[in-house]
Amino acid sequence: MKLLSALLRIICGVNSIVGKSVSWLSLGIVVTCFTVVVLRYLFSISFIWMQDLYVWLNGAMFTGVAAYALFRDDHVRVDIFYGEASKKKKAIADMIGVVVFLLPFMWVVLAYSMTFVSRSWKYMEASANVGGMPGLFVLKSFIILFAVLVALQGVAMLIRSLFVLVGREDLLPANYSYEAAEKHTPEEAV
Image (cartoon, rainbow, N blue to C red; front, side):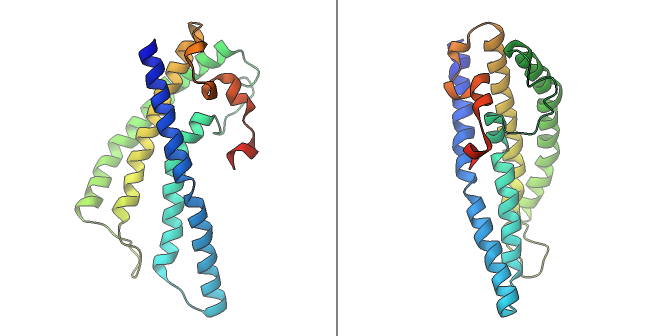
């Protein structure tokens, strides 16, 4: 059990660090988009690479923070039954959701993206737009990062559910209990 607890803490720690770091790309997105708008409408200047940049930053940010959102329980969920359920029922629902939906879907994403991403690296793929950004292969690699980190967070959810079901919630990190998830507010995400 201690080994599972350590694994849980490592997965949550990695996703927390990656999520908080990648979320700073939102600042780059805003600055780049603002610059594109000012250049285009005030000076009639346009750079295709700059337009690519804010779209690519957006893609990198959202794929990079997905596992962190899952860690914080900030993802969209239909809460008709789940919201009022006991911790044990939530744990069972999470286990079923992870095993039946999340992990198989992440496997499909990973399996199908490997050829896609490796081909992009082989050709050192750049933007399809003339004058666009080089390095599209780096952006496409975020698909693999997304699948791996979300799958790992799914494993963390399984461990958390197991601890709840066997009555060992004392092994959970304080910020990864069902009570901690209920305390999250939209203001905390900012």
